[in-house]
Length: 481
Image (cartoon, rainbow, N blue to C red; front, side):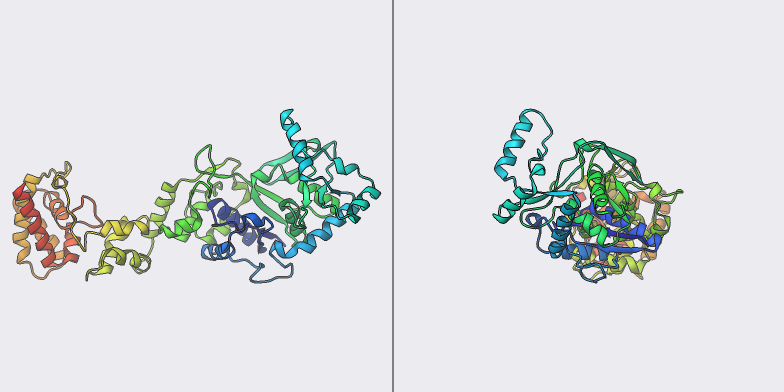
């Protein structure tokens, strides 16, 4: 059975790159009918952020990626939080020493700093000089008996090469002489990331590993650990990074948006997941719009690109708009209601306002500024009445608004269709195009050049009294100009 894991560190919000790793892992698992495991890698206690574990849970659930095993749901391979597995790592580190794949290192920080300083001055890539690798068994036992602090280091082969096959990048070969004798178990008894994830992946039966291609150079070290223990090596799928630009990665430290940030901006979860799937993966065929279930069916590792993906918020916004326009009126109103009510406190038909918004809305967070004129007419500049395409000016708009007011004053009943028909008839009688009348009305009732819906729709929602009041304001201001 295919068994995968998503193993985030609880260091803050779920950024887009992390979300994509989780998504690809989830899609591979579900397509194969396997098990998706959530593991929390919290051995770096200095970077631990309170509440980050709940953020991970909530983000994955909101994204629709439910796990089969994990800290909160249990499973046969727990515990699923690394800090609770300390004794397991020490056992395997000591076992690796017995197998000849690791050794005790008693070098203190002062000595290590001196080595690094000399190497850097000589322009040598800093590596441990393997001083403790040559200690005799009696020397090691003496230091252990004396309570000298130690770490456990991996014993790398000094010659030859180590290679592995990656599903995206193909065969990777590394010279063993370039591999450092990395620390596996720190002096505080906690494992390093490199050691913990190999031990956990084996014990949890992980068959496929999806991770960023920054780990390509570390994978030979992992495979040497697998070989030293006599364990089966999993299938690797390394993915290129998600970039802000062609030269700069997305980064939480630089303030790049997280998954939750986009939710808070009014993006739909389905649109975010759809877009993130396309960051580095090309589906077969022309379709680019997928539900999560459709992604599971369509996803193929062969479609993953070696090239970095550029995160384009403009494209995400466009895709989000497509999802919004595919909603039913009821669905849209349910999602838009809080944003409409934030901007419109007056007694206006909120559902009618939602109907105007849906064809012109790409993000819910943009709704308030689109409709803030309902409660209060802004103090707009009269130059708004100038529109080249409609061939309107403040001077030409004045007589039009005067006639519009005269016609609307006696209109019964006050309906959108009635207002529309009256103004179209008026344009015919004056032998002018509809825009010559409709555009000045839009500005007069909204104080804006661009609005969801035109003047007719807005007037219908505002009602007779408020519409006539706003027409009076427009006429007075134009007459005084």
